[in-house]
Length: 543
Image (cartoon, rainbow, N blue to C red; front, side, top):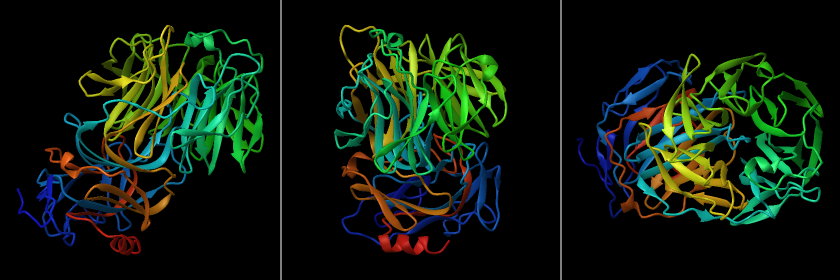
């Protein structure tokens, strides 16, 4: 081990151990990777990195979003003390892949360590739940013992869409099956829900995404008998998209041939939506103009996820996933004996998909090959996946149970979010990461639940493209995030003695449990104490 330091940073992928001290010490630079010529450490501590598929240049190191990463040998431990990470990251304005992880030093087997990532969760059944959102988390195998009830938006029986937008959490509902039941949009307000109205007269708001500074939603006539409820008698069709502007819903037009909208995601700077019950993909061209892009062999594309240069879609007509490159469709393989595919998520740099009828998640291996990661308990359908503080979570039917993936085909239940009695099905349909917590929407109770694993802080606004300065600080009993020198988010208080981050896992730069970085990094710094707001501002003023 390295030599102990004041308030010493006990790092296992990095060198010495951070031990809390009774007095504040000047933070000491224990690792500094300029990343302009190579992955060598400029701090004088010889913590040199080993680079793979990284292109170095004066303007920073380019990571390709696929194979790129830098690993620093396991000689530094974070322990239970204060530490700070500061870096510059550059991302493109138009994306054909998730941005991915910035820094990680995390052992997935023990759930111990730290994660700093830019979240991109599209394919969360029907929504782009998170987009360009920063998450900074620590853990030592801690989690809430039960899910917190965040209330029931309106008269919801189905939380059908969910997305984080402009610092808020929004959900779209199904509130019944008759002509008098209209789907609404609600905004979360600390356990309460503000009604933003019904965009349309159909019974469901089924798709949602934040795009170009506005909230977009798709509406449908939801056929509830597919979820084991009373048959829908409403005849008001959906198939429309709306944008929320100045407190009003702006109608962006009827999509030809559709009575519902299911998938919604941004790809290469454009907004795309899929049909619900009819096969279709449309691209938004502004005003009320849409371009029809067909479907894969006449089959229904549903949830959408952008990954490694293409947009992938689930399907309800067979157990397959489809690939759209911006112009044409192709098939991305069959998933075991599945007959329907519901949700998509990127975990450890690979696309994962949830299926019916055997409640299995499959991992994409490339070349149209998929590998089973195991069945989630005895569940039948897997929906609403999300990567949260280093681990993959997914919701299920019929018990609305949430499971955490622990590797090697092992899925661990972290609780049920809907226990409505005497019904055929309960769904944990969607998820989003917001205010450092994992949120899930349900059927048939129509409640939203939340959960925390470890301690987390999130910046619930999209990280702007171009060069941005990021600082993540663990200081005594809180986590803080800074963007471009400004404090943007702070966690709830916690007992620092409960979070000893000592782990044998290496420090990874540009890689982690979400996705390999798609962007550039430079001037990556690690300190064994708390850098102050003034120090952050100075670092952010010198790109």
